[in-house]
Amino acid sequence: MNCFSLRSALALGAAFALLGTTQVAALPLLSEVFYDASGSDDGFVFVEISGQPGALLTGFSVEGVNGSDGSVTGTLLLSGQIGADGLFVVADLASGGGTSVVGADQLLNFDFQNGPDSVVLRDAGGSIVDSLGYGSFGVGQVFAGEGGAAPDAPAGSSLARHGGWADTDDNAVDFGVLASPTPGSAPGVPVPEPSQLGFLVGLLLARPMVSRRTAGRTRR
Image (cartoon, rainbow, N blue to C red; front, side, top):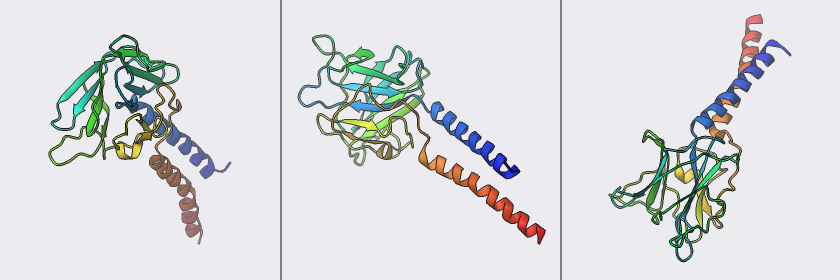
């Protein structure tokens, strides 16, 4: 392997390591939210969080934010840790006890509103870790999400993050409507953001070419 090839391989490895570190540092993330069941919401609503397996969520909180005036409609205080599959599901506690959400990790009494509204994930210090705004926000309404708003999911459908882990800080890009909710079964492997990966790989591949051309001109 020549000098440029070795240098490029090492740089490419470092780039992948950097991307992985950036992605992990952005976790945990809201990965799926189900707020409008077909019929009664009692015991069906849930919020799924994806993150590093074993990461503690105790002290974290999830807030519902009213799109009309920005008021907090409810706060969920989380307790526990993300499972080995990289997922943690908080489900609504039904009025009669239990829940209809299979595999829930924590039961709390809540029911997020239909859009336009937002769901915000905060860490133990109160800082915003991730947020999802959904629905059509008009003038004077409060959007507490990231980038553009995700669509308002029809009854019986959920909003799910594409790929489970991808995060471009734009809800309109990162989330889509999932016809059949899938609590606890989002992809468990982080993937680098395509825009960052493409830019770094392209830059690294171009470096040897520039160096060889420069060397050729020097020889002349």
